[in-house]
Length: 275
Image (cartoon, rainbow, N blue to C red; front, side, top):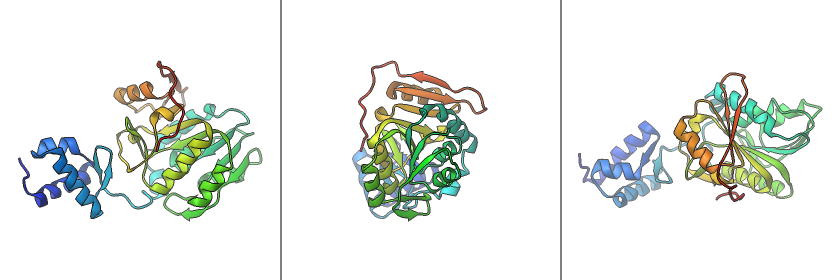
């Protein structure tokens, strides 16, 4: 069916974005019988009205300004997040200074941290997990508190990070794919990017659903990730992408078994945070 009239075409684009969470400009153009330029123009108009979010290659269904609330995200894919958190523990060297972001997958790691570390974080759940531990040093980053992410953020947070150096930054994401690693909001993306910038190594924690998701704010290149940890539900194509791009991929079993690390066969990638 051809959608020659802009109003009916835009209604169809909205329907697709609401149903699937994402609409591809290329696919929509082919299926609706118009040019990609026309679809991009439609999506720009819908984005201007606040009805979709423009992302690489198309548009996604709108999300709240600061993303889905922490509790709602925490309660999704819990087995996968626990598996990824367990598998990430050996990636933190003894005595390291480690930066932990405000993601729910990273929060699953915080409860398992070995003693002797210095933890840098803006996440309230991570702060609470560390304050009861006498075997951890904690550097808590202040700033403006955002309830949806249960974290501090903004210029004060970013400025505090600029004065620090960390051995490992452990980050999470709303979505990841060949075009990069994404967050649901600009404030969260800014802090993740700052943590990656001051770290000697970047570890990315992803449950497999993030590899099929879409989000608006790109904060990192996949090639800037030293190690990515995913759960065993990640499919073969997704693993192939990660192994071709990241230096090391660790696959976490969904039971308490031993995670399987695999290295990228190609030469090491440039170590720089994307924007």
